[in-house]
Image (cartoon, rainbow, N blue to C red; front, side, top):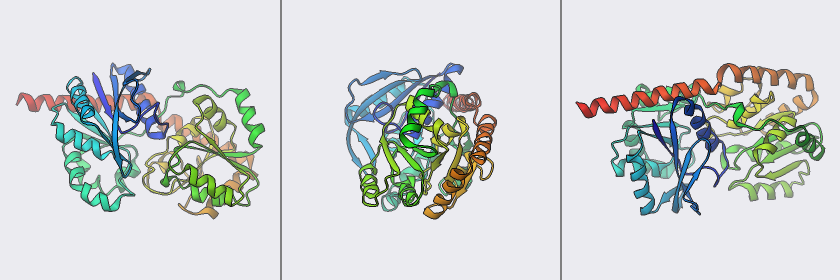
Amino acid sequence: MRVLHVYRTYFPDTQGGLEEAIRQICCSTMPHGVRNTVFTLSDRPRPAEIVFPEARVVRVRKAFEIASCGFATPAGVARFRREAQTHDLIHYHFPWPFADMLHLGCRTRTPAIATYHSDVVRQRVLGAFYRPLMNRFLSGLHRIVATSPQYARTSEVLAPLADKVSVIPLTIDPSSYPPPDPTRVQRWRERLGEPYFAFVGVLRYYKGLDWLLEAAAGLPVAIAIAGQGPEGERLRRVAQMRGLSNVHFLGHINDADKMALLSGARAVVFPSHLRSEAFGVTLLEGAMLSKALISCEIGTGTSHVNVDRETGIVVAPADADALRGAMRQLAADAARSIRLGAGARARFERRFAAAATGTSYVEVYRAAAMATSVRVAA
């Protein structure tokens, strides 16, 4: 089966949790005979195609962007149409409003599903204009996959589409990551001191990093922030103005350094405070490495991964005092951190096995293809 994944960005142009989620879905379906292609935008689509182990990546030029929504050139739209015709199924990754336009405007007959990663949270005014297009797009899909029971239950968009919604949690395959290198782990510990806390992710508005910086004030341990993004420069200025010498902005780091950084940390801190954060792949990566987790209760998949007092600490969103308190507790109690880290790893093994995800997605793919063929035959 040939599956075309559609999202506005992918490796190597950007590095983020959603890109990693797509990669892991591709990896988990490959053993079932699925051949994956990722259709995406790029500011510099040269080369236009890249072959990664998990998928062939087709990059078309981004013409412009409105409210973080990229639009393709006419040539890119034509390329999507050709790719859609040569694949057995289209797998959209929502939200990307331009993908809704592609799907409806190109009128492809290829069966289609979507993974619903997040509600549209920030663009409320534009969202009111977008909603009719969104509803038409989602209602025409064979199946919509939510990434956690929490999101499926609390999303106002998914509620009227409940008969189309399945839940397949995001997963990661440990074999798809480099094992932590002890030399790199030691290097990070020497650079940051012990203990330290680690955040990894794209520096976006919904990541709650303003509250993490506020929480860092007066905290006698280091906080490492790895990643790049639109909020990066502003956050660096805030940290500098506040004199936060214990906050270290690392920029983009490769997978080997990421595994070492997380492995050496006392805990993973993930302060996302808005529903745009639907899951939190970094939390899974921390759980995979037996790290205690700190996250916020925002009614999404972050609390599906991190269960308070079982795998880590869950605090109120946008609450610097609560974040600081959680880090103080774990910084002062290594034994508790180890115990919660063991719980995180145990839950990871029980609930987030990549093999189960691959099987579930392939069942959805086949059902969509079968339903479409039945309708065509009728």
